[in-house]
Image (cartoon, rainbow, N blue to C red; front, side, top):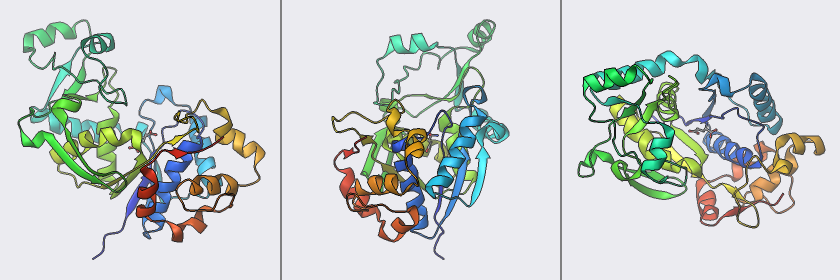
Length: 313
Ligand code: GLU
């Protein structure tokens, strides 16, 4: 039996979508639709205080306007705490976690941010605390929870995977991040844990997202292995850069969907321009998302991703 591709949109509703988010969403959607698969929408609002319902409403409206539809959801991470707590409990019961009392300032003072995404290599400061020390520290400070990663000589801590766009990847967790957070000190689950639990419980087989998350993938695969989950296929897509090489971000107001929708009648111009950056459309061509389905292939994206994908405002 051929397995159905199940993909997802997993936006964080922290503001209006911009061209870079649209590009990643378009690739995720094309990866699913070109394979006749199923799309799940999951709103990553883990920290309800940081997200406004208005931003979520706008996001759904923007996806519909773009013609990027979904078959299941939206699911809301803010309503799924129990499943994350359950996964955390299973890790804890096996002695794989420990409480960490380090402050953000202490973490940054101890080591320089390691990866481009700001990941800090954790030195293991709280790993050896005795039960007495933990009890004493708990009187003044609520701890976060860290997952123990294998030592550098243990093969279990070397994660190798194949990315559909960036090819073979290999990471030694003890070198890249060390023991990593699975729950924050304010009780909110860490992104890494929530995303792994959700991808597994939602039956996701193909994860397509921006390459800023390439460095999170090894941690996620390690968690999948501990929790007995299947590993999805990964495809990280390039982040768009401005002609001067700067990464596009939400600060580029003119690439914000609010601006774009105020000036354009439909999404075809934006979609055409985004598609042209990876050879899916001619320069100046206007297209709908559906028109791109039969043109899409991972090989094409892979070829273009070898260079910066430039998008001019
Ligand atoms: N919610 C994350 C974001 O918007 C994406 C998470 C993921 O795709 O794994 O950046």
